[in-house]
Image (cartoon, rainbow, N blue to C red; front, side, top):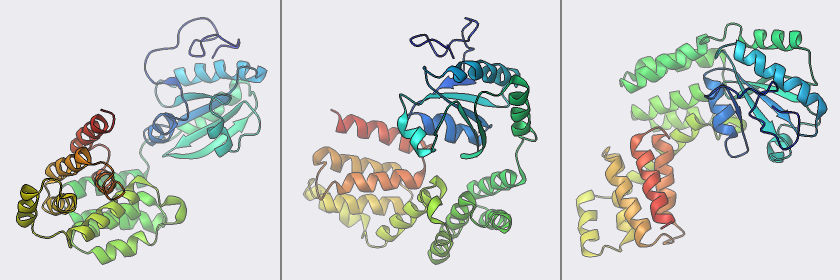
Length: 309
């Protein structure tokens, strides 16, 4: 990061450009989750909170960049200008800069304030990256996820239960175990498992996905026969309730792409019908399937096209 206001903060203090890729990058409120929270699930991420007027920042940042480059991918550095991203600074209760936070597995795990000398920065990063390979919990999560994909729900449940013996509030394990119960048809045990999730983890992706799946499953029980619903829609293409019920029935049959298509068609015809019910149901479906599902990615593109056309 350059020490002079107006210069390119992505450049090194010696005038050479920072290397390509995402080893060192600038972030903002809009990209912080992807740059830091999600990225830290793969390798530790240092977040350097700085401002152009901060003299000690100009001393510390080049040291951070140097040591991070020398780590050759074992750690990443994300720089956040607090003048431009005050919300993040307030959320993390940053009262003075420079401030450095270390994130691992989506959570802040360490940090320091002030311009440390290079030797201390090097020691800090060495401690952070020591044994940075997959932890036993990470290994069990990988086993459980692979077992779930293979429909080996017993193995998945055992792996998640083993994690919970060590970390009773682990949201990935709680969400995964609930998902295994739901996939086996035991919705009641899935709900009981989700009830163990502490309030601070209610919004975790693994938990929210199962909550959405449960909601869709409950709706599917009341959706009705898909053939009869399709006949109603053919008779009246603007019968939005029938179209929403059909989408829910299709989800229950595993026809998620067809369900997404029906919900998108309802939105295209009248996006505000019944307080945007079709859009809400579509977002619930997206959450249940997860952000990496190809049907979700395609559906989001089509939704944006409809909403902004």
